[in-house]
Image (cartoon, rainbow, N blue to C red; front, side, top):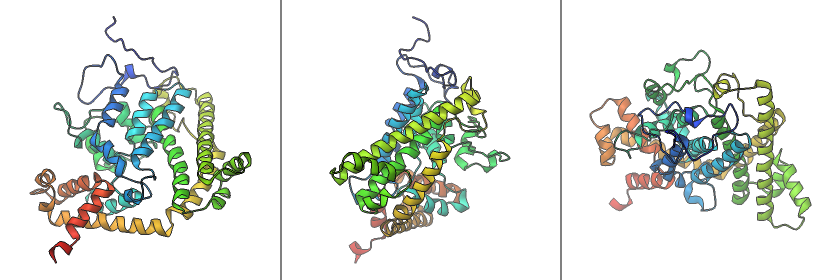
Length: 398
């Protein structure tokens, strides 16, 4: 048997990321004889504490609002499924696409984008908060599972995808000093080529994220009553598909109508990104994954027409859903919880749990703030609400 035999097939496209040519891990480890480097990365992500916490972190709704709304965990699984499907169609490494998809939301704090904005504002004097940088911090430092290293010791390609799936982390003319603190710290030991695009598998994960959250927001918005079937029938892109389903099944009940329309919509988006990417492959003609990184633009993309339709749909969802009074009130409460917790822990670090308190006492303000930020960012929605209740509810003492 050859020294480097693996029982899995290599990717087909010449510009796919080849697991046999991975740039490796920060801490060298022996190869597995049964799993590729990217399969091992996927497995480490799935077994991480940060991944499990996604089950009670949300994007639009707070976790306690109901069991039927998506959480970041169910969303990540949907993104991974879509990413694998597109990667296989294009002959790319679907394990790497899946690993990036499963890890892309690890750094989000509780309460979705409202929680992130509040935490970023709290951290403004101390380097700010960025969920992609926080995800990198989690998998390279905060996860404490292995005796040989901190973090998960993921492969270079998975880390690159986590940081750059939405494009270069540094724009032209920017330097490492312009990057979030977590990226600066890690890049000193393990350069992730922050000025370049990522490999194609990570680009697929980014668009799979767009496909998943736009479509599940339609489903969740209808379920929550934030907009009606009549309203979605007139929305850009989605309206045509909903009307098509209604024409095919005139007496279909509301729930099945929504499920079928969302199912078809996902197919429309996948078909578009596949066709547009194949067109770009023909134009750019990449012969290696390095050609993809150096192309100067994304290889994986929606068509211009689809991009315009998506923008119209996003405007509809922004008005009807993301700025709905019920959502605004939930997010207002969420931001107050984050601000209150941050201010209290900064003023009284002795109120932190033991493991965190030891790192936050007798240090400078910037380091203390990062410890507090790490603690809050790791909270689930329900845990943050309960921590706030314990620390600010005076009723037991009255």
